[in-house]
Length: 425
Image 1 (cartoon, helix red, strand yellow):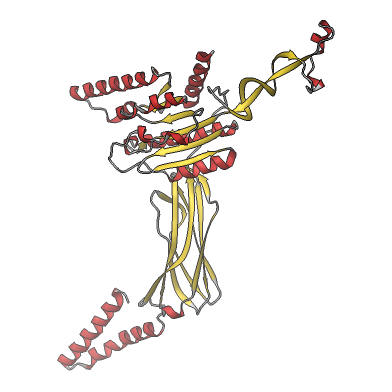
Image 2 (tube, rainbow, N blue to C red):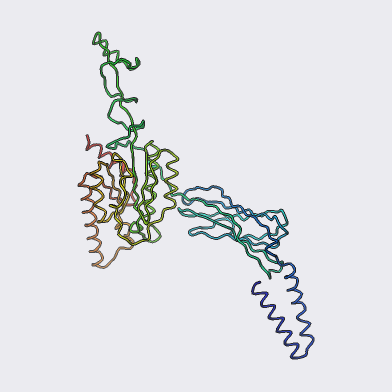
């Protein structure tokens, strides 16, 4: 029952009362069309026990990139008596922009027939879940309605945009003893020449250095090649509330998240072992792994990540460093705060090589910079404090990238790791 039924019922009762008071038969006869109209609606009104509808939801693709179009199709089949009319509606999701179709669909279904609600949307990074589709069945006049939610649970994941960085030679301080692409500075099986040693029984004949043997009678020499291994890399993305800095519609956290995704893709493409840790309201961890499967795990976790909502003063010093190996290269992506500085001596004491990528929150807020003298002075003091903090980290032998998010990140990372290699030499 809806407002129209109530209006018609009140109108008919009013006409009957007026007819009785005025003893006017014409007014009484005027109620007949209304009563017939209501009677037909009652006779043809749907009953929940006779409605047999099933729904199934499908997507053009279940995982896609940020900003891509996602096609949604909800197929509803009638396995009971005829249903007419039928109104289907789907719940809108936050940050969803409908580009084609609509969230409502009208149909009339005979027994055994099927109809489809289809639409296409675009959305930013995130996970989108549906549990049901709402159906409204009514009589032909739309007077009496029956509402029900048809189970149609499904999920689609919009992953962060990954920008493929150009590969560069990675030279970590330590490597894992597994074949890879990083020269390990020890003799082994590879293609890069390492040196020559005396022949040992069992050495393959193809590695003999015949020219040197010709110069030294009754002696044989074996060529050695530099062994290539992989690196163990741990990514730490700061997902605390303080990292959610906004300038208009732009979000600093989204910049850092996309940078982390691109770094993970680069390191995994080079065959390294990569893990991810995201401290926020909860500690999210993607354990070490290799290849495209690991990249999919990391992107899946990043897609669902939201910056923290708690205003607590959780420090990076509370992160569980034991999840990373003592020989791992740790890459921290964080705006950094003064309470976070104690984590870096801990990392250096464990023997980890560390790279800090710190996006500049002060420059990011440039559009909302104060114009009064006191405000400009506060900005200058904040810049000085930030420089001192980054300098104190750099004194520990940690490479620091003071990242303006408008700058391309790959050259900065390449220069930072290359400089670390030069210092070791």
